[in-house]
Every structure is written in C-alpha cells, then in structure tokens.
Length: 265
Image 1 (cartoon, one colour):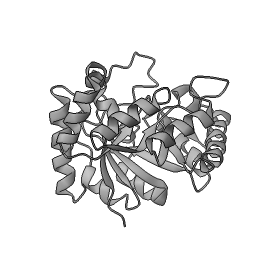
Image 2: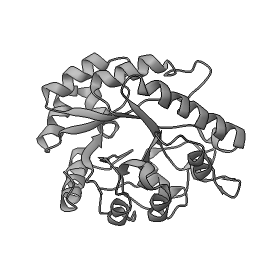
Image 3: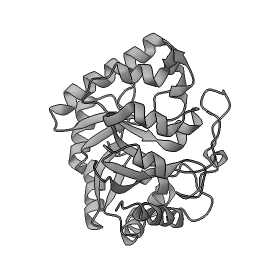
Image 4: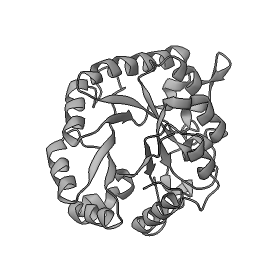
C-alpha cells in the first residue's frame, strides 16, 4: 500500500490563473502544496513549466484530450506527450470522452483501442497515460456490465485510471465497490465532495457546474475516507472543484487539512 501524494487540479482555480497566473500559483504554494495537476498546457508547456518552477511546484499528472480521433484538437499525440514531459508529467489522463461515445459498444471498443495505442506511443516518451471519468461512462450497460467496466476490460495493463469520486457517484456507483473492482489500475483519485447527484451529461440539458453543489472535502456525501482506503495503489490524491461557492482557495485549504488528517501530504 502506498500513500498518495497530495495535489490539486489547476482547473479548480482557472479564473484566478487567467487573472494573474503568478499570484494564483503563489497562493497554492502558500497552502503548502508542492504538486499540481496541469490542464490546457499543450500550447504553452515552456511558459507553464517556468511559472510552476518559480513557485516550487511540479506537475506530476496532467489532463489533455488525446482520445478524439479524426484530427480533432489535441490528437497530435507526440506533440502532446512532448509538452507533458516538458512539465515533468508522469501520468497523462484524457479527461473527457463525450457521452455519445459511451452508448455504443463499437465506440467504446474504439476508445479503448485509441487509449491502448496512446499508451504504446507514450512509453517512448517515458510517459504513462490513462483515463479520467465523469459520470456518463457508467449510464449504459454493455454485455451485462457498465460501459466503463466494459471499457476497462479492453485496456492494456499499463493504462492507468484516475477515478473522480464525485462523478463516479453521480454515475450511480457504490464508489468503494468500484474501486475494489478496479484494483491496481487506479493510480490517481480526484478527491471531490458534495451531494450525490444524477448524471447530467446524458440528459441533453446544458451542463452548469454551479448546479453540482460541490463542497470542500469531508463536508459532503461522498465516502472519501473509505474510498481512499479502497485505492491502495493510488499514487496521487488530487483535490478538484468544477465549481465552488466562495473562495476556492479556502475550499482547497479545507481539503488539504482533510487529506493531511488522513496522512496524505
């Protein structure tokens, strides 16, 4: 059993980063963080790497969309992987495959094949890759199991998973049982709390993150402590908010205190 490293997904503070990147990173560093999870970096890896270094931060994990075929943005795999390595990323997760691609068995198999191919090419860059869930992956049933479980069974062993606990619960899962099924594939967790909501991504209605009701870790209905215990192979525990009512840095600080209380730093 390993103790995961504490981190924060920079998407949580995206507005602050847009307003003043250095000030936002300085606030994160002042909270005692040394690790962050990067996003939106493929076009500015040098700039972001320099900014992180100025504040004693590193990005050991990152998010980039590399599973969109047919020439969609982000599908230049080698360029994406070079950008990730410039930041020092060790595991790069694709953060979102649209709901329409989880309703069809062939599309799920194609997504798995794309990820397996990406894993092979990433290895040449000294990089691991994986997938980060939301809730749409769990809505449909394929061959008697959820679309996500079907997908995971098609992945090569070297492919990692980052389980977002809030979104996994929104997908109708007992998240502790899910983590038990996935076992050593789970290499990172998004430690995200709030109410257990219904999946919003297959409803057809516009998604508003403000409707998720997310709260600081330890203050919602997601079984975070049991989930952390159920993921002994997780290397990273990543705090994230899609939306937070109030000062998001205070929400992050509360999450840090919660995780430190569980021995995660």
